Image 1 (cartoon, one colour):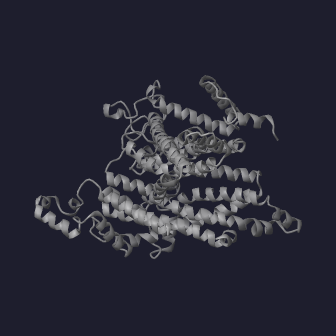
Image 2 (cartoon, rainbow over the protein chains, first blue to last red; image 1 turned 30 degrees about the vertical axis):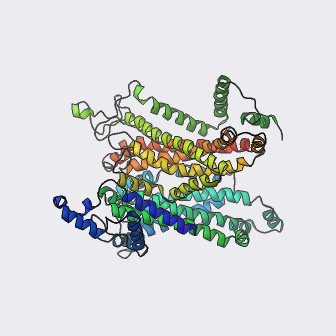
Image 3 (tube, each protein chain N blue to C red; image 1 turned 45 degrees about the vertical axis):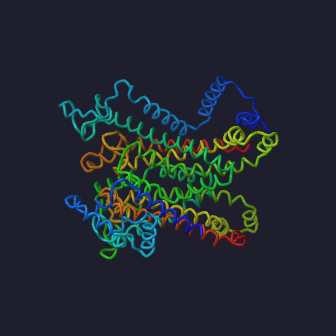
Length: 308
Length: 313
């Protein structure tokens, strides 16, 4: 219910902001020479429904949007949804690979440094994590481009090979952008898991498991990691939402034909409809992902589930 | 464990202490800052020093003797070379249009500082006050404020920013600060409200109510002073994010317009020559990363040291 309300609000605010703009959207539709022709302009206005009251237009726009019709691009004239669909898998792949990298590297490191709190390994890992959090992803991307594309010539600096064209080519094109995004993810997962593990290992049930003579490794995986999986789930969900911002930057830097890059070109072309459509889409995705995370959290935590 | 440190922290929190004159307060703050600095480990000291240095340089950029004009392009007048390596004349060399890189780094710090400072100030003042009032007054006012917070939190920051600059059709430091400030108010309001809610239930607020203190007076004298310490600590975390954000936006060409110096913008300029000469990119990158790292380290230090104190509150 709350989710629907927030979604309605987001779409409403975006629509209003676009509509209340100074300047006539009709000017973007017809060539400058034709703009002097009052009758023609009026006809186009009527045809596109610009003369209707704002709320009516919002209702119509929302109705279309729910059915997947976000309108046509002012610049290319094609339906926005048609421009978005082929780009979705690209951004999706980048995000999935980033999250996977983050988990595969962050979780083991977090476990080790939490288990061996205060050891030299822990100190090194924590310092590296602190450093990883302090490098903006575009700087990291530039360093990667310089080393692997310009000096070593192992990977292409920009562009994208689809997985259907070539699997290795696809892996090569996803490697650097995903690493540039994943370093901060790794640092976040690692830090949270570390402090989680340190806290859990002080619990009484860990002591009793030790007293029973269970092996350290067994305790760590079966008893200590389990409660932390809740924190990690929330964190991963929140980070996926945050990754939306990250992919926009990284797609631009690596010239990857994803949603973020399309949003960018739309901004520079002043393609209002496209910017509006993508804003609504990304904000809605953000809201839905956050709500899903809350839901999953309730579903997997028996303590909360019983209370609810 | 009611040792002397706990007693001291009680007094410093201002709860139990007698109001003092402003002058002695200033002396006390100065001394405690120095003491805090002495307690730090050496990496933290280095980070704190770097922050002091970069902020000072940013503020006094125009008055530093010998620092060149960040937009002076010597080669136009036959007096400088482009992509010059470091020399006595240009300590950090020159960029691709022969501007002094050191001057650009210092002035870039100023851009970053103005942006982060402006946004933080908005968050602290607007968000802090709205949240404190919402948590204390409750009712319809709270509902309206939280409505704004919910909507604003639903937009990913960069998406909102791109939307805003397209619709308003302007770029620049001012619009950038305002747009991000509108977003940053939301988390501040949220934190302030949560704190305000819990402070409102404390004994001293009940006591103030019992002796017939007016509501605005309670808000100003009891609630707000107890909400702000958390917000100030939160600001350091936000500051790091804001420095990254300014650099990112300028790097993408949608932040501060050229020729204004900005670390992100200068990195973007240097990127074009990355295959020929990588040097002009390095000073702004180092300044940027060092600043973010320093803010993070100092904020971690502050949090781990403040934890023991706030528990005494």
